[in-house]
Structures are given as structure tokens and as C-alpha cells.
Length: 164
Image (cartoon, rainbow, N blue to C red; front, side):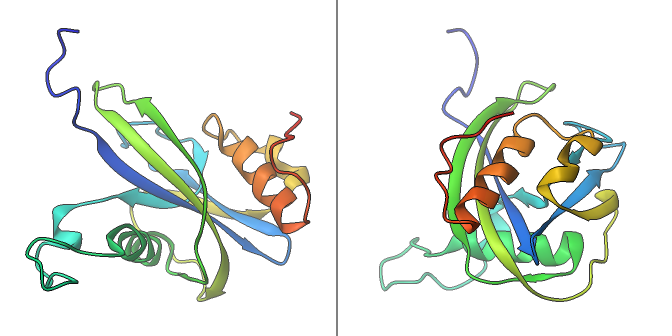
């Protein structure tokens, strides 16, 4: 194999936030390492500070529960200023960044709960789009399919049948 740290991954979670039949997408800052200037859904990376400075969940040392959910809620609030409702798992994927960092992405979907979109410096624009508007945006590969899957789930249809 030859590569160092192959068992190490950057862990990232994303949220497909839906509201009134529309989905929140953001345009990534031009200085991002991966996919600069592309449209995506909000999310962010898991960091040790998301749990290490909080008491463990159980009496056992070094065990924390709901770390990813808490991280995702924090990231969404920081990045786009909105709160989410119940978070549901959609899928996972792996990609390799241009700097050769392997990234495990866990994709979730959730209803918008409250707040107006206010971007931080990680994104330069946002839009609430319908499925019919997906092709109007230069989305990161796979995001289109994920949004369509969530739209099908919300309509009670089979999400595994995605036609692009």
C-alpha cells in the first residue's frame, strides 16, 4: 500500500435541510481545500474539541454519546445560522481531497426548525432550491442525487430509484 496513516480519516457530516419543499444549498468559499466555489449542502468536520472538553456521557472514562449529532448541530448553526429538527441518516461516502486526506462523509437530512440563513466565511452564497432547480447550480458530485433521494423519502417514494 505504501501510504502512511491509511486507517486515519477526516470525518465530516452534512445536512440536507428541507423547508416547504425546498432544500438549503451553499456556495463554498474560493479558499476551501476541496471543491472551492462549488455548491453543496452545509456541514463540517468532527474535531476533538467537540467532545474532549465535556464530561463523558457514561461513568466509563473516555466515552461520549451523540458526538456527531452535536457536532453537526454546532456546524450548521455556525455556518448558516439555522437550527435543525430531528436528524435522520441518509448515506455515507468516502472521497480523497486534493491534499490526499481521506474523508469519510456521513450525510443526514433534517427539517429546518428556526432561524434565518446567515453565512459565515466558509460560504459565499446560499439558496433554497426545489428539485427542479438542481441543475441550475454547479453542485459537488453526488449532492444532486442526495437531494433527490431526500425529496423521494419526504414524498414516501423509494429513494433507491434515482434517475438523473
